[in-house]
Length: 225
Image 1 (cartoon, rainbow, N blue to C red):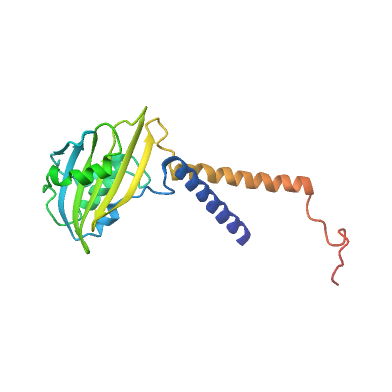
Image 2: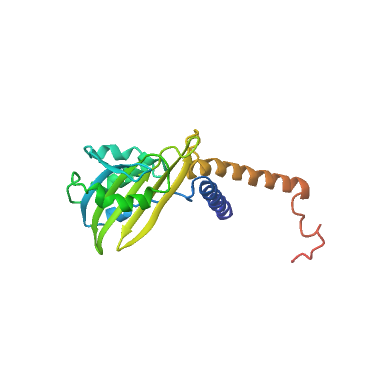
């Protein structure tokens, strides 16, 4: 029984490893998409929430912040990397913080950092700037979504600005081609039965090719009396 349980655990581990590699080769992350939500959730206070659009010429315009309804942020699975779900994870962290979600910052103040976060994409970009007070000072997380970069190709990026430095938190490029469901859980659920099948086939084939183990007397081995 212990041997069977060990085999199952090994097959689960191998299937999970394979699924993670396939997911990384497609989307650039192994299991779940990286997110700045944990940084926001560990902050002390929300200072400002600014929605924006950014044009290729560097013009940045702020947009009104719609009412935030907590129930809107429970429909996206953790493994989903689409911009709506990525943004929902950030908003779910924002609503746990004290502060006024209607407070915004000016476009002129935000323009340099928005351009650093989103400026490598041509076309219209849009996103949000979330400014919070952390234990070590002011933090600003910028999340932006590109327009169509090429045929059906889009991108999403999160950049954290803190203490005069910037850190890329997430950067995902994806094609809207109907294959967005090919995430780690999908690969795992299909690879596990496939690997189990290969193992069973290997065991059966091994018995047919080599036959069952010979008794000690037939194999010419000394017997213990």
